[in-house]
Structure formats: C-alpha cells, structure tokens
Length: 540
Image 1 (cartoon, one colour):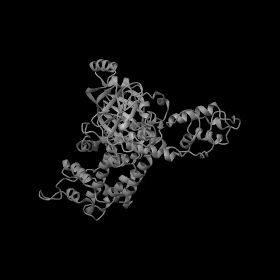
Image 2 (cartoon, helix red, strand yellow; image 1 turned 45 degrees about the vertical axis):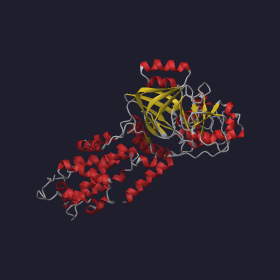
Image 3 (tube, helix red, strand yellow; image 1 turned 180 degrees about the vertical axis):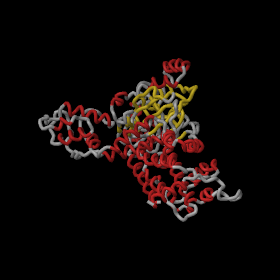
Image 4 (tube, one colour; image 1 turned 60 degrees about the vertical axis):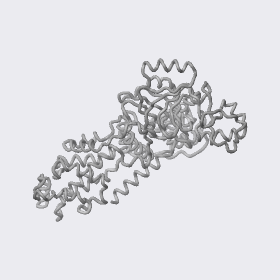
C-alpha cells in the first residue's frame, strides 16, 4: 500500500508544470535548454546522438514555451503513447518511437537531477519524429527511389514551419495532429485500412500449389483441391467448393474465381493458371503485408508531389489519371517501359504538344535495336520509312554511311499513320527523352500487363487527354493544325504539372487491396531497407 501511494505521489509531482526560469536566474538557461544543447550526453536513454534536424525540431518546439516541460499531464501523455502504438497500421514500427520506454521514463524516479527534462525530451522527440515520418516517409526517397524534378516544376514545400504548427496545435489534440500529418490522399487512407485489416487478421493457412502443367479450362489436375482451398481462404470461392461431391475438373466456377483473383492481382484475367498466376497464388499473407507496407511508404513520398490539378502516371498500374480540384476526372490505360528500359519517376510540367510528330529514334533504341538490323540489311531503312540525318538536320545518303561506325547520325521517321508516336506527343522537361504519346499499337492496351515500351508512355485515347489540357481557343487551333498533317510544336497557354510514380498496391474505400506485379523488382529492396532502419533504431 505504501508503495502504491508513493508511486501516485511521484506521478503527481512529475506532472507539476515547471516555470521556464524556476530553477535559474535570468542569465542561466533553463535546465531543459541546457539538456538540448547536448541531449544524448546528458540523456543516455535517448540512444545515438540526435541529428541536426532532430535537434533543431526540438529547440523550435520548446522555444515558444520558454523551454518548460511539455508532457506535464497524463491527459497529454496517454494519447501520445496510444498514437505511437497506432503507427503499426501505417506500416511503421511503434517500438522505434519507444512508447514503453517513454512511459517507463515518465513513471520512474532517479537520482539524476535532469531526469525530468530528459523524459520530456524523449517524449517530444518521439512525437516530432513520428509526425515527420507520417508526413514525409520513414526513409529518404532520394536514396531509394529518387524522382527527377524539373527546375520549373513546383518545388517541394519546406514544411518545417507547417510541421511545427501541427505539433504545437496538436498538444491539445494528439490524435488530430497525427491525422493531420498523414497524407491527405484518399489512396493512402484506403491502403492503410487494407494494411490494418491484413495485419490484424488471423494467419491464413494453405499449402502452396506445386508447379506443373498450365491449368486450362476443362482439365483434370491433382492440384485442384489445393487451388480451391487457396481460393476459399480469400473468399473467391464458397466453402462448399471443398465438399467431396464437387466435380473434379477445372470448371466454370473455378475459372470465374481464378479470373477474379487475376484481376485483383494485375494479371491477365483469362482463367488460365500459368507461372505468373501460380506465383501470385503462392504469395503468403506475410509477403502481401510487406507489399502493402512498402506502398504505404511510397504513398507518403508521393503525397508531397501530387497537386490538385495535375497528371499522374501510375507506372506499375499502367494508367494515367487527370486530376482537377484534387479529384480524378479522367483515366486511361498506358503502356510503359519494360523491365530492361524502365520508365523513370519524374516530376515536371507539361508545356507543349508535338502535332503530327516525326519520330527521332532515341539513342538507346538506335544503338541496341535499329543499328543491328540496318547492318544486317540496309533495306530495313526504306522498309521502315527511316531517314538518316546528321545533328544539323541534313538528310544523308544511307549508302555513304559507315554503318560499322556511323558516328553522329540520327534516324528519323516521317509523320503519318505508321509513325510509332501516332498523331500527338505530350512533352515535359526531363533528361531521359521521356514523353507521353499516341501509338498505332492499340491492341496492346487490352492486356492487363502493359510494360512494352522503351521507357516512354503510350496513352490510350490520347486525344481525350489532349482536350483536357487545352483551352477552348486552343482546341480549335489544334484541330486545324492536326488536319494539315504537318509537324508543329504547340506551346500550351497553361502548363499542367505531371508526376510519373511507381507503386505496386492500392485499395478501395472498403480496404480491399489490389496488387500489381512488381515489374521493376523494387519492393524487396525497399522492404529490406525499412526493416534495416527499424533494426538500427532499436539497437541505438
């Protein structure tokens, strides 16, 4: 009983507000400011030395209160600890922020005269760090999946003041501060819901499906019971499908369930169980949870670059979305760069259109695709309608070029129906010669996986998108110029921000996830980096 009352008395004393100058005269800095000048040497519990950014955040956080302790009541501390634990649903590891260590420090008396200040700094550091990770990402994007940003694109906002304002205002509404720090993007909140649901779900159990012949409609296969059990586990099939009297062949109900599974996993929804579908079926809940986690991190990165009025190219999903007032207004399928020539992440501004474009073959395609064919058969140039030109635009005689060592030449295809760029190119500044364009290869848009290009983005129904980029007066002018059939560079009156981004999972408003193949094999690297960062933080 004595110990219980003694603890309550200590806790009460712990949360008595301390005046900024209570323990010092006007010339002596408050104890908390003294600690902040060298926090880890005076507070070993903080672990490794705080970086400069963390120290600056702490100083700015305490300064308005004259460096008095902030976490002076359970009404403020308890919500903080609850929100730190709730970071698990954001794919962040709560133990990194040390809610239990903070509680222990706050509720433990020591002989250290600065213990009170150290405990307060520990709580503040966790609070500010958590808000920063929610708003900007756990890891630095530029180190892992950098985005090239055009000089004329909207600069990333320096959010130090905004985050300090959120942190200060949130002291009376900790949950509100965490929610405000999270990306406002609906896709982030949908994905968070999916992650929380899968994280908290009972561990599903099914045996992996062995490899074998491609399973096609009407076939009998010893793996069918395992396939059905797998599909039942995620409600693609009813449990009655496992009953003994169910037909043994791969029938209509099985096929419909596999098609639904394929559609939700970004696969060709043909009901045929080949190698890609088999691999997706054999992915474990833990692997899918990891995939959702890395995409929550990507959404935290993307949020800073998505603007209310903009174009968003979803590289892995093979689509482009036009946003107006923060809402998706138009969407179309795209074809993007294949694995060996990935479409890069870019933030820029669409500034002009090339109407009736000629196609100047990019250097990589010229070197790796075209030159070998020309060396084999020089008639390939005429067959493809290709001109040979020098860097000044002069047309050269192909017979006079040393194709073993052609030097500074370019290959150009005239405008027309067979031109790979179609009728229009949408251009934006970048160093990769990447652009959005029309294509005569319309049949490829019917496929679920559309990583076919050499890096540029082919857009289905591109003239609908062009119409959205133009004013009424511009539309009339563009129609006239297109009808002439001549190549023309048309500068837009109003540039439109564009972001090309990469993510491999999303979810609907109910929290039902949709996965895509990781066409550039980036998920594993990012997941390993997140786990490594957590391990390093916990070892400090």
